[in-house]
Length: 131
Image (tube, rainbow, N blue to C red; front, side, top):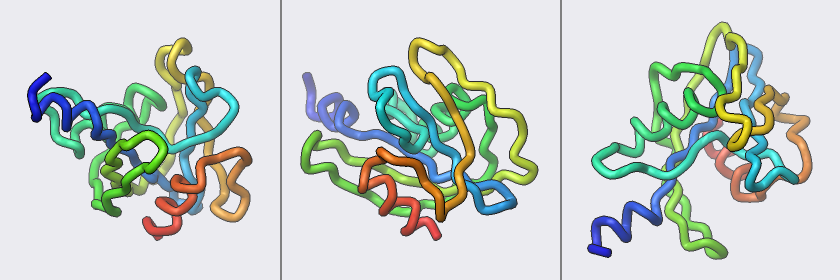
């Protein structure tokens, strides 16, 4: 595996999406069904992190993101993944249509003050940083 391929396999793109009521969009994936997390996934070859965030949100929730703002870069000590995190607002929020049920079990909106448990601490930090 070349250096570029190795680096791409270590980069994921995530989105902190909020609606006009300030609620946050979260998903439950089939691989990590015990917790809620931000929509996102691996950046594919020849794809920008921004395009990956848009693609993943569309695949996982059925929502199309227009404007994206960079929140930051995060490194996960446990999995060695580099996370490129964007934020976006949707108004009105639209109907959530999770994609392939073998990948995404559920998608839902949550008030910032009432985020579900369990949820990764790093995801909570990303949400706070987005605001």
